[in-house]
Each structure stands twice: as structure tokens, then as C-alpha cells.
Image (cartoon, rainbow, N blue to C red; front, side, top):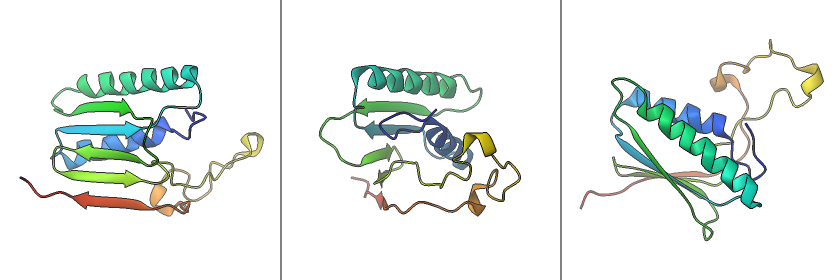
Amino acid sequence: PYLSNGFQMVNLVRFVELLVKIGDCKIFKLVTKPCDSIETTQKVDSELHKLRDSISDMEGIHLQMEFEFDDNIHDRRIQTDTNWEITLGRGLHIYQNLNPDRDNRNFFQMGTYDFSLRPCLQTHIVFLKKEIE
């Protein structure tokens, strides 16, 4: 689902699936800003809880998700226990919508299923590897 604050759960799920496949991350934390309304923030909070529950229900996978809403940030960020901090200017919503017209969707268009073939929106993502103290 796509929510009014630009938060797109589908892309977050794809990111978490990537973390699971890589396998070395055990804890990650999403820091995002609240939505424009309390109701929408509550909906995002509920969806994040569902994702967190889904992760913890996976057998043999030891990945813990944390999240918080921060009124004072501009860019969302993801922090991992492997000392990576990923700052997302656009969030994870980087892929262009190939089917903006819901009535005339083309599911045979290249990039519909393989995101490596899909054009991206302009964004700035910073990957920072912190030194272990």
C-alpha cells in the first residue's frame, strides 16, 4: 500500500527480503517521519507492526526489526547492527511506476517483475559504514 506521506510498504518488504537473503544482519532499525495526519501515522505504525511480526514468524531466520517516528528528520534512514547506516532522500520509493493508469495496466511491459529493468526516479542514497568502536 502507498500512503500519503510517501511511505511505501511494498518497497520496505523488498528491502527486508534482501536483508534476509544476505543473512548477516540480525537487527535493523527504520527511522521515519510521522505522516501528515495522526490517522495515517497510526496506519503506518500498524503496517510496520505487521511486517515486524511477519519477520519474527519466519522459521530459521533471526532478524529483528525496530522502528521509530521522528518529527525532526528530513530523510528516512535505516541502521543495521552490521554498522551500516543508509540515508534515503526519497525513502525506498525509487522505481518509476510503469502503470500509472490503473484502467490500462500493461503487465507485459519490461520491468514489471524484474526491478533491475525498471527505470528509477532521481534520488540520493547514502551508504555509510561506521567503524566498530
